[in-house]
Picture 1 (cartoon, rainbow, N blue to C red):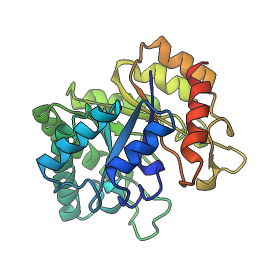
Picture 2: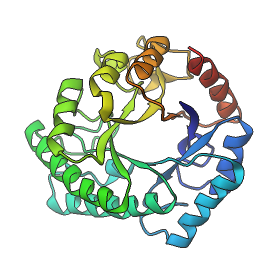
Picture 3: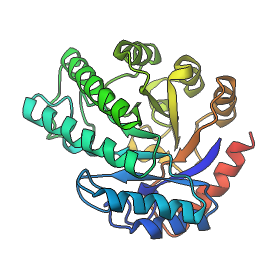
Amino acid sequence: MTKCISYWSVEGGGAGACPVADAMDQAKAAGFDGIELAVAQSGVLTPETDEATCRAYAQMAVNRGLLLESVASGMSWAVCPTHPDPAVRRRSIDLHAAALQRAAWVGAQAMLFVPGAVVIPWDPSYPPVRYDHALTWAREAVAELGDVAAAVGVDLAVENVWNGLFYSPVEFVEFLDGIGNPRVGAYFDVGNVLNHQQWPPHWIELLGPRLRRVHVKDFQLAVGNLGGFCDLLAGDVPFAATMAALRSIGYEGTLVAEMGPPDATLLERTSRAMDTILAM
């Protein structure tokens, strides 16, 4: 497994404002093997970024000896694929279809996709969606985007997030299998399930060959809300058991630390903690 960092973890990354070369230099200096770029509606990588720019980003990674195997997208939070308005759903699918092409152009093997939401905990303006409707619309979005992913040669990696969907690994497995597309799999975030009475190693064992990529975060159960996300090894994620589970299913891909908020020493602290975790 290889140690990588999210573009969102560098200063300015959340706003898409940090130049890609600078983000890569910071990742390299902190001892990471790779970086996960992020596509957004504005910033350094968007659904409208031209092919030449994308390929230049790929070459920047090569020049620095960094892996660039995945791209993340948070666009679903603002333009949700399970929104009650069909025009919003259509816009979300179109944005992510274009993003998949950009992911292919930068040389990524997978793109993270948030499949929608029943509720968005930090956005009270988002209208709560009935669960069965959200599930239907998420399935429609993933099926269509899975076809795009297959066409461009990138995996569509559906992430487990705080969205009111897929808090059961059994349901998540059934959802993915129901799509029936080998280019559709899971992007598992080990920190996102802990506050929902779930055990990360069990998710890994049940997802098995469906697992495409892994996000690494830590979480303090005593806090129990968004403020509970913390530095790696400062929370309650069972990292030794999680690493054992990943090895048991033969996972050899990237471990991407998705940390925040950025500060002057975050990347260095995270890199050291990742070394400890990888040695478990």
